[in-house]
Amino acid sequence: MPLDNGTDGPQVNAQGALVVSFEDVGDDVYHPTSYCWYALRALSAYDLTGNEEYWRRSVATAQRLLDGADIDGEQCWLPYPFDYAPHGDSTITLHAPWYSGMAQGMALALCTRLARRASDQNLSTSAEQIRNSFFASTDGPHVTVTDSEGLTWLEEYSGDANPLYVINGHIYAMLGLAQYAQYTNDADVINLFSRAADTLKATFTRWRVPGGISYYCASDYCKNADWTPESYHRGVARLLQTLATITGDAEFRTMGLQLDADYSA
Image (tube, rainbow, N blue to C red; front, side, top):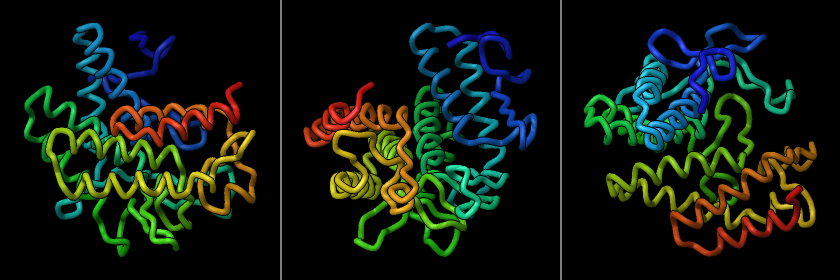
């Protein structure tokens, strides 16, 4: 992970926090998923190298993430402050603020890991508040939804558009729950993780394309739009192997191998 600022590596501010720029949005955009990606990568680089600059950047980027959070009672929400149209389709535009199960899950993993390493009560509190967001009612901000078949989804794009049931976002949210449960043994989180795992198994034939590239999501939208990105397909196959490793469930390994066999170019 390069440390060059804004040349070969990402741009960071004086504190070491990631600076996110989007041409159509702005030069310093609050972007929860990008902050999580960067901070988690920096933390892993610190673990690998012992270079304190990686630790500084991970902590600073996590703080930037939390500085922009909304606290609603005992829940912590990471709002996206710009409109976004998944797949470039204006008919499913999410209007700000919207939320992401993927971002909430990655933030949960980040705060949990940092809190344990730094023995930081503020980070522990943030982790607990993010954890609570997964149990929010659908009357307000939420990322946990139940589909027409009674299956539990951790929705990547949660806002004023219908849920898409994006597979990789669902899994990244699961990994955040698993990280939190590993350190807390929280029974409700373990139960939610299990229900989310059951959802992947129950819907596999809905988003797998035998002999081809899998659908980006499990809703009818992705099938109708033929939304099948190659890099996403490979990423989901790897994520399924990760789930197999942390759960010991061979069915996830089989699912990942099936995706690899379907398309591995």
